Image 1 (cartoon, rainbow, N blue to C red):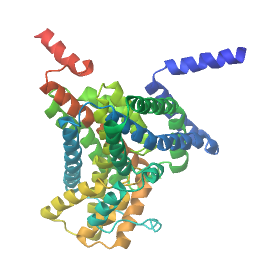
Image 2 (cartoon, rainbow, N blue to C red; image 1 turned 30 degrees about the vertical axis):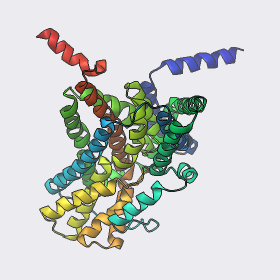
Image 3 (cartoon, one colour; image 1 turned 45 degrees about the horizontal axis):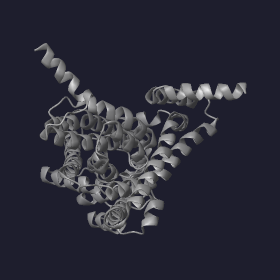
Length: 427
């Protein structure tokens, strides 16, 4: 009995502690263990289990939430959804353009290496779109198994609309109950995030060390610096243009509650449940974010566009290829479009580098060596990229909805209004 009481007290203390604080403790614990207990490889299992659990539940969660939301919806997707799509595409393109500017300002070269022979890359942009279109109509069960979110969204929308038109109230209630049950399971998984983060950090620290910073430090710094500028300056500026409020409280919440977990899971797909939960906390409309968040995991790829652009221009510099301004603009468009076809898993953007390299006549053999360099620095690059991509999914979903609320004269959340109210009092 005494041990049972102890477990209950420990569980209550754990649940009463802020999730962010718990994640921070897990992060520190993983880093320390990675340095002092490199042979305790079993610790990494916590990270593998956490990511696997999220990836397993995310496709089911997306399908049931989208279908249930549409089945009981009273209206179609409105202007907010169009605004979200526009913001996703706009920021992906401007990220690619920003990467061109930073690459021209700080040109990089690299020591080409082998090590990507086992991977295959799409030959051109047409191949990317062909794959996207075929994924849309793939078998719905296979889409859920494979984590094909374009296909999941397509079939979930059709199923939800069919339920809305044909199903009884009882069936619709059943769909809602299933959606709530899946959401609760996901909350339980997310509640264990500190252990997962500990395992992921341990794995990275114990196996990679600091060699990537010395061998490819400048290239990595350019990638991370460009992504940071996009996240901390460009994205909030675009958000400000829509909501006319200080966007940094919103940005901070998105980075803290979405970007942090995305950084360690390195998968936009695995972070979908986390983003769904954050949208609920922000008070967003479930009918909108249940569709826009999974879609964002596929097409809102600012970090991927930056990676493709910078790595391609670094390859050009290494080979002595002069890139003109028109060619750089073309590269921005291609990188943005290709990024939308990047897989929402770790390293998904790297395999699109050969397609961008082909614009400058770089052979596939050389391009795949560039991909190999990307995998070497991917421990940091891909983590930052995913944090930028995934946190942006929520930020622009919120921006679109708050923009519509402002137009309709509806109140915004307190964390956005506090500063403006203090300014009124001071005046």
